[in-house]
Length: 227
Image (cartoon, rainbow, N blue to C red; front, side):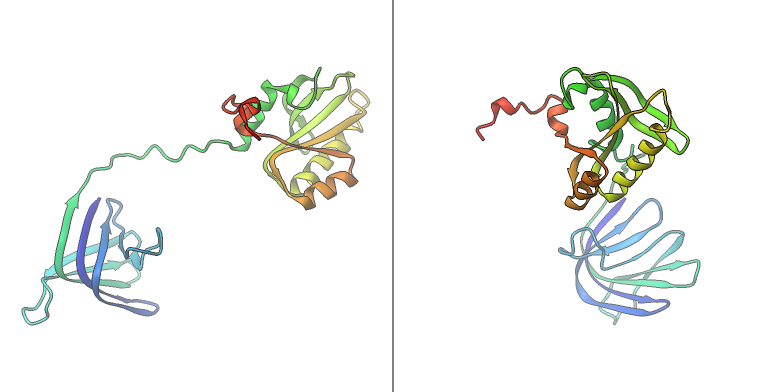
């Protein structure tokens, strides 16, 4: 990646035209061929950019133009981005290598594993029967037996919304049609459950349980809290 801080003017020509007057900006030229121009605001959003595949040509500016060089970035559709540079304040290149990608923490799969390991989250005497218990329309996240030995289907979401309640309702309908399982009750578990989802769940005799991800991981002890 090449990072250039420069006083520059930027002109785009394509399906529309856009002009950025002379000012100090950050230019990012990445290894994938993309070029983007940034100001010191707008968070991560560039002022203008050109996505790959595109071709970059650098030429010397005319002596009386007030610029030192001109970058022309052209994509395969013929759109052009002209960066006219008047003064370079910083120019550096860095090899970033292959990025391993974003590893998300606290997603539904992690919650499901932790809840399977800690059935006591739902009540004393609960035991896990199976993770990903398959039905004709898909797998229920968790199947437990409660303290009385009854089956309980648990659907796990990071954010509990109406769609998740509807999904669990469909699973329960199928499972309660199986004489080897019936009666099966449902629990909708999530880190955050929207009020509309709680209301719908109450009409379906589904229990809502809000789970604390940090407590499940053993990173937060409620006994240590002041309030």
